[in-house]
Image (cartoon, rainbow, N blue to C red; front, side):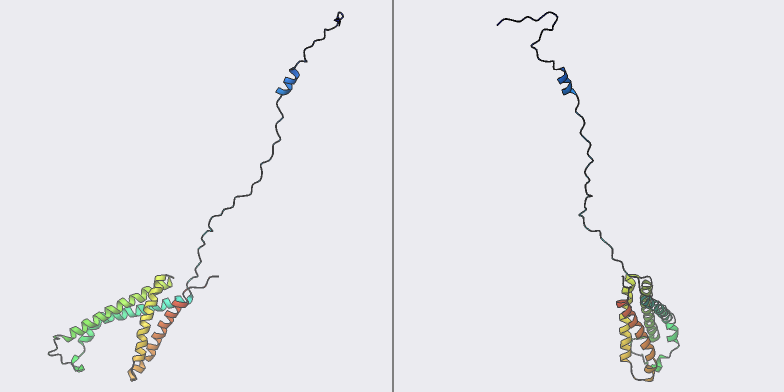
Amino acid sequence: MTDEQTPAGEPTPSADPPPLAPLVEQAAAPAPPPPIMPPPIMPPPVAWGAAPVVAVAKGGRTTLAAIAGVLLILLGILGGLLGLMITVFGSTIVGQLDLDQFGGDFTGSGLNDPAAVVSGFLAFVGIVVVVYSLVYLLGGIGIVRSRGWGRVMGLIVGILSGLFWLLSLTGGGSSSGASSGIGFVLVMLGIHVYVVVVLLMFWRNKTA
């Protein structure tokens, strides 16, 4: 084969490949940013903790219980006055009595002054009555103020005194003196029964 010569003025065909600059520029060009997707909506977290403790509402003190408290306060005041009178004026009352009229021959009995012994006994009884009446008074105040300790004290004095008045009622004779005081005993017994029943069954109102 014979080599063909390129005519003058025409570019010599080159056997080199085409330049890579356009390809490099395309490869170096930054890729378009990906589309921004909104964040997924997550459900709110569920708390699996223990349920909150709810305090149980208590009903207020009933009107019947308030009446019982007032009755105890009145009995405490009257009992305290009676105890003070026995303590203070007991010796005076005994001094005005003639103990011999009761068949009192105290010679040889070891009692040099029987009036002093009786006065001391009355003073002791008066102090006991004052202390017991104080329990009445404190219990009645606690009940009026809707306190649990007042209810307990009211039940104690109500039961003990109720038993005392019940024994007085059943153990009384049929004499005229006993018959005249039976109405008072029944009233006192009824008051203490009322106090015990109310404090046991109608202490607070029922809540809705």
